[in-house]
Image (cartoon, rainbow, N blue to C red; front, side, top):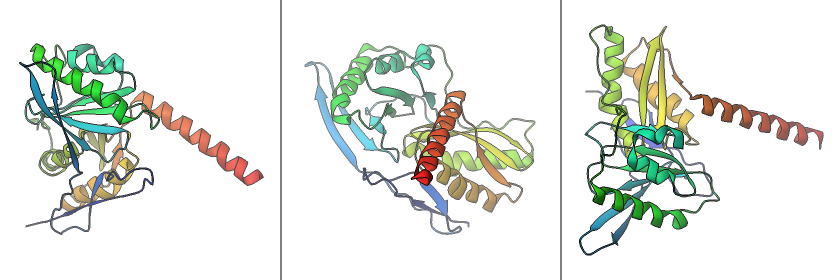
Length: 260
């Protein structure tokens, strides 16, 4: 029986959050680390009360909210990286109305909120998030009105053996762990030994997302499936633009440092 270990990368001096878990030193015991939970009990009326938990994620700008009730069906997730994407979710639309909310990610029993930047303090926006979540579930409105959420990676009849093994590993070993961190990894394709994956939720903008893919997911897939050469991250157009901006800023800083 193969076993693997899940370790964490700590690299942010401003936060005590544990960064995304990575799979290393295969085969060893599969070890999970869980971020500390904070508990909040909120009541808006005598008839309504909810016990909501918040859990840190590896991304300091993302926080996981557990309302204690079903959000989506087991194994399902859906990502709303920007307000325009939330047209199909009454819950997500309400959350985007809160100033400082940048992204909303829904899981089977949790909601991950990503704030715009470090200047937005959680202690300021959390009460509004709590109230919005409580009021929504008291309204009995559907979480989704149109969109279909991501479900467990479906194996198609025309999938070859390698793709079937990749999807199986993603569903049984990788996605459950990433969802614990308030995100998800979606299979986007496989060609010439390259597995294409898309990171969502807290993982999409996590500082250690590349480490997670290369030192974690890639190592595990290569261990079980020799045909896998590498893992590549599929980015949204907005992510590509942001990445180019950061690269340009880095070049300018490097040039200025060299001149001084």
